[in-house]
Length: 229
Image (tube, rainbow, N blue to C red; front, side, top):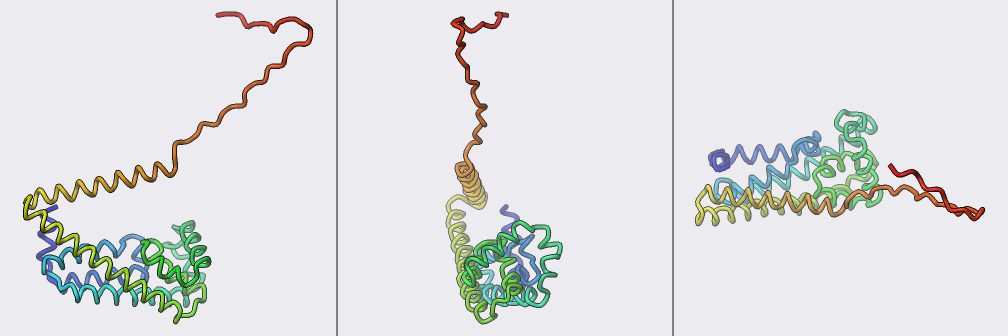
């Protein structure tokens, strides 16, 4: 892990900004978010910004602009290609989730653009579905800009704060100890999420077979007993 972090700190700032901008832009514009959420790249870039390798203000501007422009392109793709968009391989592969996203958009209207920005799958498909639905672009742009601003700044700040915390831990524990601490925290989060999901679903209840009802005899004789053995 320390080797990976050392590698990132030696990547030129312009390369980092260009890569992050392309990933965030491509999430909804070319549906790259199906396989690679831009959120991860933004968090890593925020981490690098905390080391001084990447200017944090420039990073925030690139992320916010790429998010808004990328979603606008995704909107136009949905508007121009219409139902053909749903027959593409990316959309047909996740047909059930796409149908849920369409229901979410129909139920919430334009506010789904803002809310969907904070979920990886919705972030990738909602702009195209909004264009497909015939939503006016001005209305879409208002919620898209608000979501892109809040999400972009939030991810950059989260990565920056995480990087600053990592540096403080590394100062006292050393790079190896800090890396172990990060791994332990991530493992704890994974276990917590799994337990929470298990608590929601609960144990499967076995289906109880209907009990046989014994009918008393009416001739006054006791019920015959089965032979032992």
